[in-house]
Image (tube, rainbow, N blue to C red; front, side, top):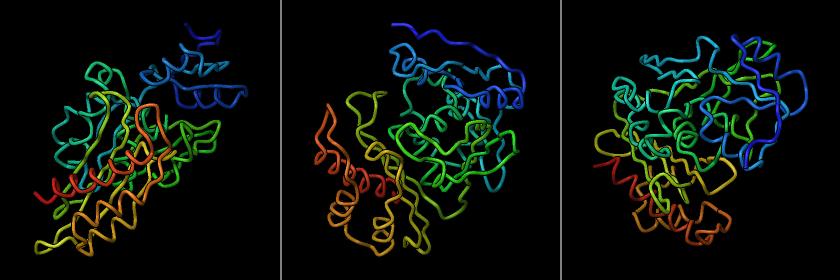
Length: 279
């Protein structure tokens, strides 16, 4: 299969790209294309207009500060994976990025693309949700910051307006005392995940005083497991924590695994990620 007939546009500025999005009809933005192009080829997406961002200046780069790792939307996943300063500042990225597809796809896939695509089975949206990160969004009315909690709306659906483009992603730097864990189960490495868990805990005097846990691939968006977070701080034993985590999600059956198995995976991944963080 090949894409349905469409108009291909290649703007050189953000303003031009936003104006193309605002013209009406079914318009899609393409960044790296590693997720979108298969949808086009199978005609699961049939836009009237395709807006390619590759010529838009200012969308590539990684900035590391004391508070955040800010990644330009068109920065490739592989470039972020190889940026030692970014991974040192935000270790959860280093744990998650090797699970994103394959090296070949990470060479072309972009950080902004995978966030804007809003696939609940993708790793970086789960990381962003865990860290309480945010996206920088530009539209005809200006620039706004959108938290991860507000960005992901439903399966492959974000809260971006019709004329808005995600230009950067901010992964918070949590600082000293924070430790991280990440786990994923897929049929094969690089396949769509059946369950994902991203975890961060803050220690004081050897005890967990704050926890953040996000799950992916088990709902229509990445979700925070707030009851699990509270249980970790309360020091709930691993077996009880596993059961609580499993009961906190309600994934649908999939062609590869029933709902009950995927719930069990979440429980196991939470316990493993916590053990990794505390090791």
